[in-house]
Amino acid sequence: MKKSTTIAIDLAKHSFQVCKLHGSSDEFNKAFTRDKLKAWLIQQPPTIVVMEACSTAHYWGRFCCNHGHSVRLIAPKYVTAYRTGQKTDKNDATAIAVASQQANARFVALKSIDEQALQSIDRIRQHLTDWITATSNMVRSLLSEFGFIIPKGHSAFKRHIIEILEDGQNSLPDILREHVANAFHLHETLAKKRADLETSLTQHLKHHDACKKLEALEGIGPVNALGLYLSLGANGGNFKNGREASACIGLTPKQHSTGGRVTLLGISKKVGQKKLRSSLIQGALAVAKVVDKREPRNVKETWLKSLIQRAGLMKAAVALANKTTRTAWALLHYGSEYQAPLTYE
Image (cartoon, rainbow, N blue to C red):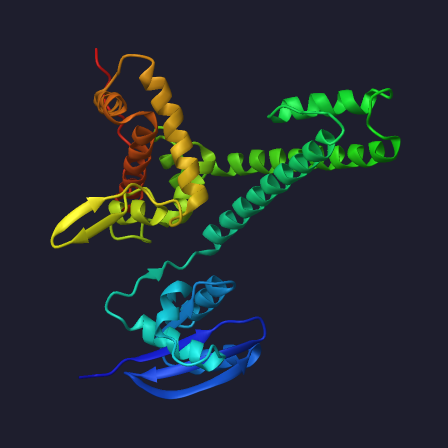
């Protein structure tokens, strides 16, 4: 039986530990600098290269693919169980190689440059959102110590801050007033930058075939379409089927089985892609609220309204998000267009 060769790389910024296995035998395990690793990989015959799915993994994965290698990215949490001894670069590289050879090993799909660029833009958008929220929360909490309680919402925040700053007779100390104004200016600047980024991204996605296809689904806008595209892959290739995709995002119930008896425990809040899952459920919830207030217009809405009546609005929204994810995978995998359910006459 012919033994395959596996090259496992423990990634870092400047020093890279490489373990080369021939079958289950360790050929060598040594460190490389960045330039020497590139030169060495170019000289190697086409083989399997395995790395943890961490920072710079997709860059190195594309580099290896361009030189004929087959790349596999594995989640770090699946590697830990196969590390023996202390946590060293050598042990980590060996653990990556061993973990990749397991029969039940699961790998992360390699992103193209287009997917990487879109994901980077989405990360910047999320970072701006987090920064905006943190700034407004800080200002709200500071002003509450002087008796100013600001309601929720961006418009309420803006209106009340302007009123507080313009009222020179209120209880806000003069020494603090300038700094509150600077924090408010920072908040508004960040909000404008996020709005400009979202406008630019929305315009780009209008010409993106996969995202346009996904936006036809109920409860899916530009942000959710991009999130699904990045999660599922260009042709849905990140997963074998729609259920696997939905489970990875965290929209399928947890299971506990013993003695052949299976118990469903509801979706987990600790696993899956939390931000994407939350966004998908919010979009589905908006659809469910509309359907709940009127008569169903097609078969899908009849199913959704019946589920709302049996299980409640929130569970129905989760079920719709689950169905939407599976449908999205099918659209990308088979290259088809979404056929909306026929409306009742």
